[in-house]
Image 1 (cartoon, rainbow, N blue to C red):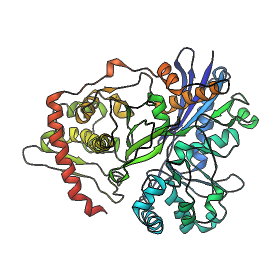
Image 2 (image 1 turned 60 degrees about the vertical axis):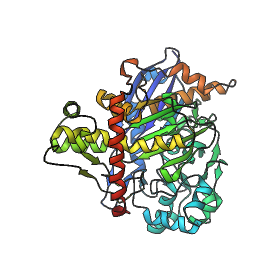
Image 3 (image 1 turned 60 degrees about the horizontal axis):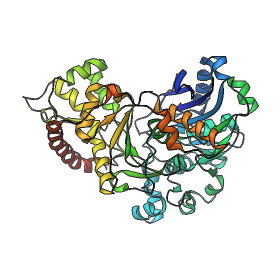
Image 4 (image 1 turned 120 degrees about the vertical axis):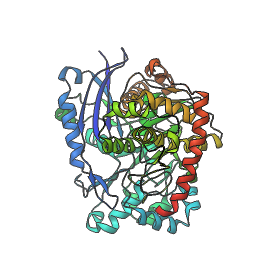
Length: 494
């Protein structure tokens, strides 16, 4: 048996899968929940020791026999998080996460010093947003100066796991492009932005490597600790969206992946740089060598979870109730900004239910509106893709939302594209495993990631959803109303 392993460090849990690349199946997987520190000011943090514990728990649950077959490992991690380490490798402060919105002032300071939004986009291909890493570093400098003074290593969550496995301090282009410290077109660190934050910052950043290259090999210490073979390669890894693209086969022009989890993301592979930061389309690099323009919303299943809680329903009950309502929920709209929002850029945003009348106020309409709202938020990203000349062929749907038949149909109708769901779940972890296989094969000769994905990423045809013309028409009208309401409310939250 020949296997590779994929690790996915998400916001809510860490997962490890062992993938038999000859039989093309996941033979074993393990997970560990992650806690979250949340505060009213938008703070969302975790601790490095929780990541350490996650590795211990996940590898501890896997069988010794299966672990011995692992030939390479690939790591996926939540994007943008800032892991600040001192010279001794110990965390100097908590890890501020992608969903942390407490750095609005730092974004404003960096943007002003750089000469405004247009200059920031020119330097980075992206706006300076609270979710990104750069303002988190300035936040540490201003709020925890003693910790900043000792700062020796700046890592993203996936880089931290790579370092735990290999002892090597490196970063690949995909995750680097989500730091707001990196010129995604030229694929190099931005000296200008780094110097605005602190003159020493550029010298602290890791060496950049190609996504096909190994980050290093498993050390003897890590092998002993986790029960895995020493000396096997650990691939470059990447952010969860970059690895999700690999795990869904979005490695060629025309394919889009839509992830419906705590956050919602829509991204597609491109052979050339594509970005529209003003409309929420970030200009990221892929972790396969091209580019990965991406839209991210901070409130996806968050909205449905709150509505479920409001009516004390489980997931199936919510779907069943939503099925009773027509497309567009008779004018009821859920504005889902429970955690503030990144697209549109409203870190102080608030959620609301609007459009209610004496005739349409019922559980069914509110339930369906909560499902629709998450997709409306990403419809704008699809429009931005098309304006830039990207020609979408289909959407590959992943995340918790992909398990819901009614939600799959809603996505197909609102986006007016066929929806396909990968046969194997855990797209980010599987993406890490496939990237590890790519790295392994490249060590003995050139290998195409597109060819590997075509061989290993299969679709579940029983979960395909195609747009229905009358529903598409109804949702075009509902989406226009949603957009009007958001545009009206936006000035209140800036």
